[in-house]
Image 1: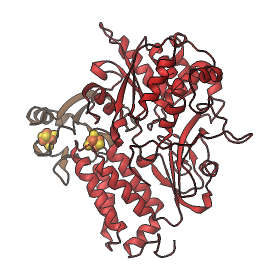
Image 2: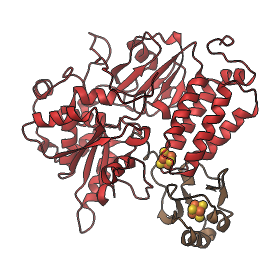
Image 3: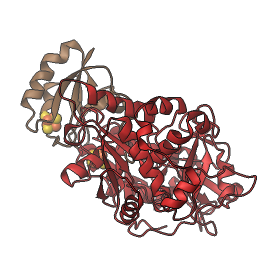
Length: 86
Length: 422
Ligand code: SF4
Ligand code: SF4
């Protein structure tokens, strides 16, 4: 079981508070939105966390002004399950 | 090519040719098939027979979704069935027939709904029965609903089916957008931490199934998995409908082709000469460009020899057309169709479209190709739905297939009409 930080892109406004609290996990993209470092694909929406980052991640979830962040435990979401036109 | 999607062109039904090609299954009842023709062609069938054993049949058949994602139908259905039974309170599941066909180059679903609505309704009733009497919905654009309503009226004993109108947007058929439209009247994707099969419409286990997939379910419920597997290949069993379009004089046509069909054969069946084409867009605007030779249509297989059919769109480009300009137009459309909810999609897709249009327009700047690549990598995986990575996939296939044209453009000439030779 891995803890994942989930980013709800429909809520996030990209001011970047989370990237300040989790500098090792999240970078900022061209427009200020959080960008998971060293991850690709859907792991940039459900970001697997190292144990060392869990506490700071809890803090980010609590402080995100748009309530766009959440944590969940479990394995990777199944690939290929979200696609327009499905 | 027009992006206006408010009219339903009369697409000619593919007439079966003797001894050649796939014999029609889904459209076997002929044009405008009513209840009588439907029964004459496929035989009588009682939805209650699907109460047991249907999910096993679907597993054995290996049917995959025909709406784009090619997800295994039995897996989706079993997940929804399992969630419905879990816990103290059993929530009645929901099955939604998804006829939203937002892909501008797709017309097979509206063709199917117009000519074989009863097969779609049978499939919907079958899955509803298999899920213990799930609520039924049909979600389709305004032009498609009256025919379905009429068909429901023709049937002697039909359980209640609710009709919901799908808006004509690219994203309206995405599964969470479908549920959002039915629940809230807003056809945009929602953030999904829990799967729709666990918690969808009003928190009920929800199955969103493409209308062609449902028609295939109806055939499997009647004739069984071994029959279904008589067409296609072991890894891509059964048939699929494809919407084929290309340069004049080829006409837009819906074909039913076996799984694993060879692309050149499909193009020829649609009246085109593969040698007179430069590239083919397979899978729609979230699909990829491939060369007309050497690819089979299949959701599985090595990318150098297979192209994923997605929602069944096949669009051919003639030798004179500029692939970069064609891609730039598509990406501009996709950027415009972003639901503008997710930052990376809202800003990243227009940025990609702008770079691509600069290249297409002849700007001489070596850094543009690298910038396009960088933006694609930046946006993918970062949205509530797969619109960003779908767009990125199309662009990277263009960079690959039209590599020579990109080099030419960035050196100041276009190999398309009026440009240097290809
Ligand atoms: S703190 Fe919240 S709203 Fe701000 S950038 Fe991070 S996720 Fe987005
Ligand atoms: S990724 Fe784009 S198209 Fe998909 S929900 Fe977000 S903004 Fe809309």
